[in-house]
Length: 598
Image 1 (cartoon, rainbow, N blue to C red):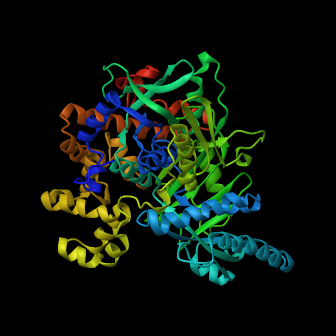
Image 2 (cartoon, one colour):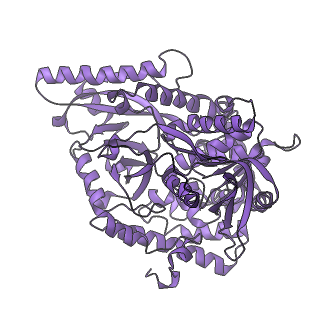
Image 3 (cartoon, rainbow, N blue to C red):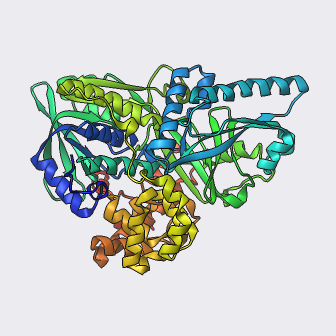
């Protein structure tokens, strides 16, 4: 727990000095709970454990949300298709979590987004039947969310005529629809929510260390009592042990790797996880005319077209993936599939020339007998393959808090601690006072000499922590400068990411703390020099480090671009692996940056 004299913000600041201190703690202390994995479930588990007064550490091999948790459809939702599959308990659970996040836990990060369910054209009887069928589903969605009460956080659904649907979404082809149903779900910047979870855990005393790769377990007899860690920021330093009474592995698509580390004692994993690749496209807002999103049925998955600031996100695919899990690659086939599906309902077809960004992520699905990944369970499981080791896997982003509470409930029982989860009542950093801050945003803008638009941008990304970025700008007015190539972001956001949000590399900032890598046609290549200058000044980089960071980032962008021209997964994967990982994985693969064709 933090000292009473230390503010919640200061205690949750993931600064370079804090990383050094937390590394020392990892070496010197024994923890009640050690969480492996810095995605949404791992960060949620660390927060849950810390909020119960347990001594907690979290280690992540790369960056916070570097895997699945930064590559979602950016939705906090119940899942309409799960109603169709009669997974009613999963829908109710997810909608309850959506209400908590949008009203109490993270209203600065989760906000309503309207989505249309287009009703296909057809003969009169078919039209009536489809409207009744889809209308019943959306009505059930509202019922599960709770029609009454302030906790639902979203407006109710509404039926629209064909003219009403095209008024809200003029780009819909008139001959393909006979109306629509509008409903609401939550939109989130998934990576920023994970950062806030980790920082809130840190504010309660958790040690949070990224670039710390677990390479094995520490065992005493047949009990796991810790892990061996390699600090990827100091590759020449020796591995060290981290001792813990309970180890929680929240490693998503890497879950099977955790069990493999214990294969010498014949441990069976207890669960199997399959990776399903989901690809998303980002196009400019001007490419499609509409004031709401779309949800469409496709032969293999559900397709979303979601407004995202000055852009649209189009996704997703749902295909099995057995190649590199750290950097899943989108192929030309994936891109063509998404364009073909969305163009069936648009009056102006999109082409590859419209695409600003592409990203691919892997869903960790509990493996079953189904042939298609779209049929695998989105429920989660907690297993204990060996005394002292808990694995949590499966589930969906929206229900991270439920997964975290389940695994920490089990850890608490193991530790003899009788304290229930508190996270349903615990606002994340930046949430406290958010409604008042949003109400007073024009006054705040006048006081700080910036536009209301700047204040709104900061509030929607940092909540009430925005005051700290404004203080940085006051101390150094140069930080008010828009970032080169991405004028919607301020230089202050790069510095803040390095000084308070645990960002260690340019990739962390341009891909996750901001979304420049997918929101600009240049993928961040026109921003990288400016970002390196600001980040270098914050972290004390010399010229050689700055150049190395720029080279790494440019190589990554080039490899991703090349992978997206490849015909299939195997070729796309090979192209993506042409660029080394900035965190030391290059040595694991034997790749030399100087040999990469930039």
